[in-house]
Length: 86
Image 1 (cartoon, rainbow, N blue to C red):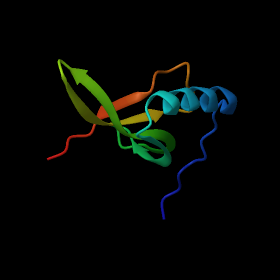
Image 2: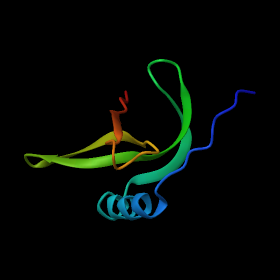
Image 3: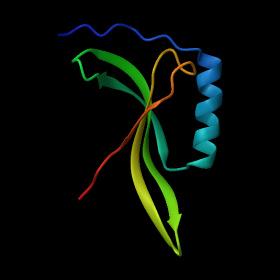
């Protein structure tokens, strides 16, 4: 079994910002999961997964996203991905 080092966060700052995000974007869910960097390193990181509603004209589109929060947040911005669906 591979070893994944424990991740430490500025808990109060992260908790506050996640609470704000979850207040505005009700379809996001906080999770802990293994993030794999481009160079193959793996790290346990917090993330917000789900959809963000975007209005374009008179239509609403639910965009699936994953926002990874690195342990030195807020000094580094979240790593953001749009998760394509069929």
